Image (cartoon, rainbow, N blue to C red; front, side, top):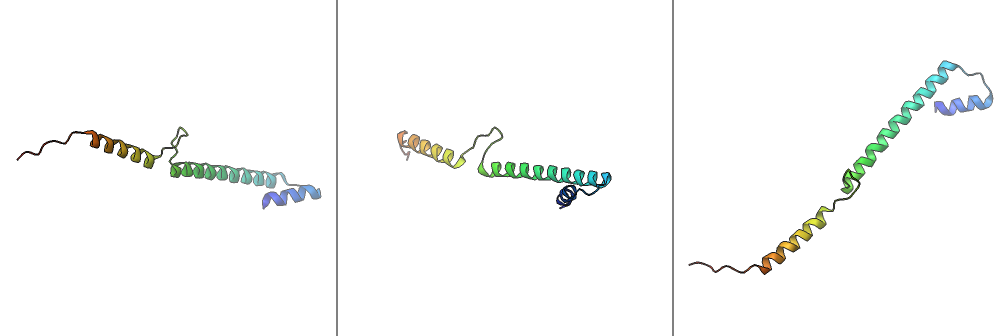
Length: 86
């Protein structure tokens, strides 16, 4: 809102106070930095939620589990049954 007021004063050609303008610009800069930090945290959170590792690739753990399970089942089927000792 302060930025909007500052723009309106500039458009109207009003005399501007240097200290007030400096505060407004500093406030806007701080707000922008905060917004960027929040946006970065959101991107990081979404990446983690999607299973995307730091290198930028996604890990599909469910698919990996399913593939490993299928391979183990095939190994079990090919193994010779052991005779039961009495």
